[in-house]
Length: 256
Length: 215
Ligand SMILES: Nc1ncnc2c1ncn2[C@@H]1O[C@H](COP(=O)(O)OP(=O)(O)OP(=O)(O)O)[C@@H](O)[C@H]1O
Ligand SMILES: [Mg+2]
Image (tube, rainbow over all chains, first blue to last red; front, side, top):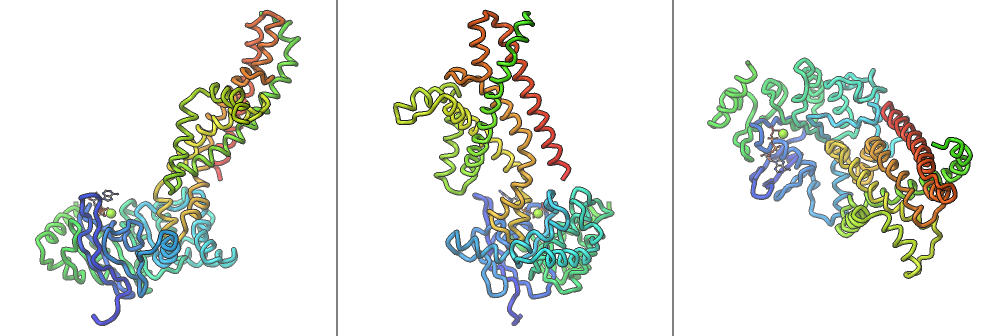
């Protein structure tokens, strides 16, 4: 590929003590590309995703977003300012939503834009309304998170991330904590983003969703990317034994 | 029991109870101040501040409050600290309860789900913005009840300053025993007044806690 990658992870490694969680992973994502990361529990998927915005700092390696290094070596004070700047450009959605329970939906969405982008109340409200409409949650703008279902919470969490107008969105098993009947509404919100060509990295256990939405699938196991390729290749004709095993177990698990 | 006597002396006890109340309010304010500073130190990134906070807590929780008050009031003049009994009482009790409140406030802050910090930091908020806008508003609710427990202990603890002759409720009871020789009645009356103060304070804490929950 000649095009410069949008996200560039170079030789990422991470250990907790003697436990190597990521072993020399490199990954390039182009602008507008949608990448799924699949793999067994404990394989390092979350750790890799959380390294991208330095929530879990790497032990070794670099993460670049366009021409900026996210985990740039800087003195602590400067680094704090730098990383806050970088994180504004990297949206992230968590398995357990992590909405702010003391704020309404509106408050959840406007908090960061008001503080960090110095939007006025009117501007921030307009932004909140726009992003909520985007995920079909405008009618719940003055609710508290505790008054929402899991699927609704997750859609608000997506809107909250989008309100910072990030260049890339990271999703860490965002439907895993949901009742089955609530999964689809969240998937729909993500599909909509995909159609708008948002650059996304999606850790998921849902093979169907990965197949429908993603341009590329990475299979991780024990801290390495075992195999990667377009979904039709990974899901139909995986090369590695570990990938085959995982898919066999997983598809069986789904069928039960 | 000599109810006539109790009826005759109770107005003087109520006046003394005002001093107990005043002690309690000032001590609570000082304790909250010390507690907030102590918790900030205990949670700081600086090892020196963390060590200072930890020593504050272990020294003041590890020795009797009465000894702390004695050191301040009787020992103070030796090192150039001259305080009247009331001042020494407030400072001694306040700094003491502040050590307990340090742990209460710190406990409430670390009880807020880690995911909250992660979500805020992910949006680009700094450590201090996260603390102010996301963690503290949630921790504040969590600390109302345990701070209520601290304040309950503190109100009862004000009785200690009778030992340095602050004319509060317990001291007043002791003085009336000297003239009436009726310790049972005098201490009983004092006990009832303490109980009323504590009961009303408890109602206030419950009210605050309920209010914090609804919003
Ligand atoms: N703070 C930590 N301290 C020590 N080990 C950790 C820590 N966080 C994660 N690990 C270990 O790192 C490995 C990878 O964890 P990670 O959460 O990235 O896996 P995962 O692929 O996301 O799994 P899952 O599908 O269960 O979410 C696991 O073995 C885990 O036990
Ligand atoms: Mg995970």
